[in-house]
Length: 148
Figure (cartoon, helix red, strand yellow):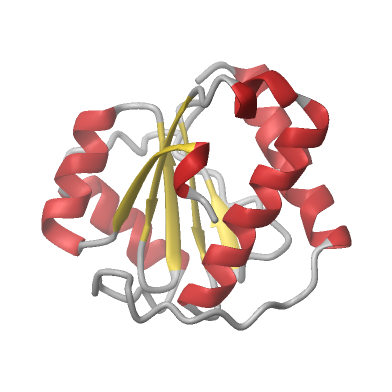
C-alpha cells in the first residue's frame, strides 16, 4: 500500500466519521475472535504473527475507532467499542468509496480487511492476514461485495 493510498484511507475514514451514524446490527453470524483492550495490545499481537512494526505511529485518524495507528505504509490497525461499530465503519467506508471511486465497487476490486470482535486490520499482505486470523480469529473481507 503506497503512501497516497494510506493517506486516502485516512481521509475517507475520517470523513465517514462525520457523516455516519450509529447502527445496531445483529453480528451473531460473525465468527468469534479475540477482543483487544487497547491498540497497543493489538499492535503487539500483530508483531507476534510476524508483522513488522518498526515504524509504529498511533495517529488516531480513524474517527469511528477508539484508537487507530499504523506500522508503516501497508496497514492500518484500529479498535472499536464493539463489533457493530467495526461493521458500521466498513459499511460507511464502502459507501464513501462508491461515491469517490465507483469503479472500485463496480469491478469489486480486492480489499484486505480482517474484522474481529472489536477491531479491524487493514493489511496489504494476505499472508499476515491469514496468520493473524489463525491466531486471533476474525472475518476476512476480500471484496466490497462482502460488506453489507
